Image (cartoon, rainbow over the protein chains, first blue to last red):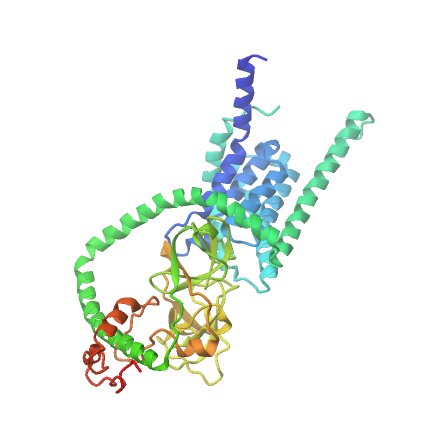
Length: 172
Length: 343
């Protein structure tokens, strides 16, 4: 094996880590305290945007077990019941994987529409699970606001993520 | 994937792979559910895992949260510059008020000291504290908690109280090596025994994820006054009595609510305080840190009272007739015991 081959392989390996690195960075970004009134309770689900995006365009670089692990990291950082975000992100991933072919061929507005539906389902499920886990009905206000913020954020997130996608080697 | 019905090894392999993937996916789901259940049962392994992840991320979050804090400080400072005159006037007025309170506090500390000497009172162990930075608070819509950059190696332990300069913030619930999680008193799972400072009525301050937690289990004949201070009662042995919590806000949405002293949007530093072994509730209620009932003045007490220097002054000047000099500060105050503190 020539050194060039080795470098190429390393390069490819590094680039293949990009989706995971970006998603983890977004998880951490979501936990940074921002001194804006009420921000902590409606912080948009940055990581959900990334999982949705990579599940459509590069699912093999973000396999389900990594999505699961990312969810657990998010739970550990945000203090939610351990496993709640893992379930939410896996749910998004699973729903996208089922409709992947549909999303791949459609214009952005339709993808955004799909993002809205899938995120809505994921947040409602998370809200239900959290309510069951705590044994109370959690006020739906903050969760609804979080949904709207996440929805509004997606176009920007998709723009940045498509930029990152150009770094990746073409799928085999 | 199962739609490809071509006979042959490749097709069978593809079907098998699809099934395996689906199985793996469902297993992950179930595993996440199981983790949630175990976490609810406060399983040690789950708690360790959670604390371990937080430990790894804490330094990164610490680094990231600093520029955010700097920018927000700059904005605050600009605002302060513009309001300097008003702020100055307000502070001058407050300073006058605090001076009067300083007198009261010195006097009471002296009086306390001499009364304790009379009773051969064994003082409570001095509390130690750890200052920590809040590095993470993106709890989302379901929880109210904060991640701090101190953990077990700094002496943080589960159950300790977290305060800032304004009042009680919450309690430590998870501890890692170099990070810990504070459950804020506004969280659903936060239940803190409190009492109303003037009426001494006991209640439980129950969070409901809103910024204003509610008072539950108030005695039926209790009529909390709007603006009345709420402090911890020391019941349940988790927190000492007398920590400032907030003021009564009145009935909102059918609940008696409390406005905490802490400004939740600017929670940058907290003090994790170890009060040592907390005495039985009745004793602790009696020995609560100076709670002064003087409605004319607006008290601004702090938990960690400057006991040491005052005590020193008193013991120096006790030689005359046992009346501490601080008693002269307030006219009409009760005189100190006639006999000297030393038997």
